[in-house]
Image (cartoon, rainbow, N blue to C red; front, top):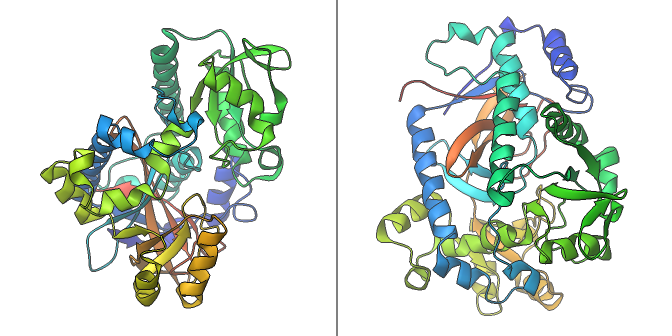
Length: 410
């Protein structure tokens, strides 16, 4: 990876105004974007593509599914054929080592914002002069591509485009105040532009009549699930649970994909070879996985003393967390703390620490990562973030979302 700052080419006020005019929240007041960029080599992108293909093979294999679903609630065990069109793989690219998968998100925020950022920064910085960098999709081309993916999903699930509503779903407070609420509205508008009836809704706005999932009396067919309540245990999900169990509605991501792909506890199987025979992981797949998934352990009674002893090597995070919520500082980790977590039923994993790349922006060091979006094994979007903290995600200025591109050469 190489990092560059073309601030001398950019009128920042015009760049930020263009982002806002394209539909993003006010930059930098509400949403921070870094006026620099990173370039990922074509060789690394090709390696990551091969890794994602291996990840998809392993996590959809019958042996993997059987093991992942063995001890989960019944709703997670319903086999589903939906494939989320905004799945995201988060990587660290340490300066002195190979890129590493930190986690997989079947509910990755920012894929539409990233497309706008990449396209408008490319234009503002006159990056067409940089002949070694692949041009990003235009915003209109990206919208067309996302619409095509959704149409493919709907057609494969229903046998054709459904008549019911397309609903972009999230909690009420997120729809009103969330950082990505504008992105949710963009997705709704994209659907409407394709001629599909679409709306934003929270789980409490849905009803189940015993046959159909309804929103304001209208049947719902297709749900883009942006909720971070991955387990659907609260009462507000009762209607959605009923429709899902009756297989009357498309939902992605779903409890099934969460249990078989996104749950951070699965990183233990991905990173370590101990269960390969039972999971039908091939030697070549193991080579790829072990090279790029850092050592990860689900915290259990039998290993917590050893993990506490080695705490300086690991990052401790909740198995069902997101956006770095619940992350534990290793200095605060000890056997007593870990036993308390287990006693309270809080699932945690310990993942070997992986350094991020570092670059200086506006006179301040920032630590960068890479987020890759792919659908059915094919990468369609790169983005990055620059954090003010090495070990936590702090995207306040001068940090923020980072324009990210692929090089045309190795």
